[in-house]
Length: 166
Image (cartoon, rainbow, N blue to C red; front, side, top):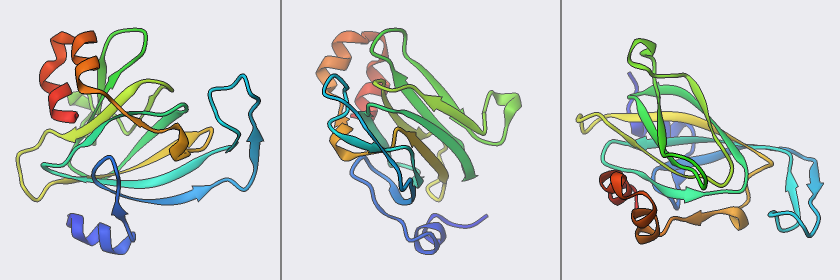
């Protein structure tokens, strides 16, 4: 198995503001002009895609975007994505190669959900390499970090994971 440093160097990944490393690999050339009544401020690309790598001990901080985000597993250890939807109950999914343990190769986070990710493994060398596709395309104008206290008040039974990912 390759190391995290191998993928960071060979895929030209850079630090991501939410944690981990990434590189945008696709941004559609066409855009959609959202109107004033939309949650999007102006035009958005139809879709975007990134490579995303998270090392053991790192986290993808809980954040929210205005678009659906599809996650695809590529390599490394299993990665758990925790979701706190605006309406509904918290949930999670684990990306990995062991379906008998409930792991999946791809899954979706719905728009407007707070979400973050972490590895559950204990080995210091572990990492997970995934891709994320966002439609309508990702724009940092649509990105916000979660407020720890607000989520703790709304989801008090999930204190440990909220504190870990904020």
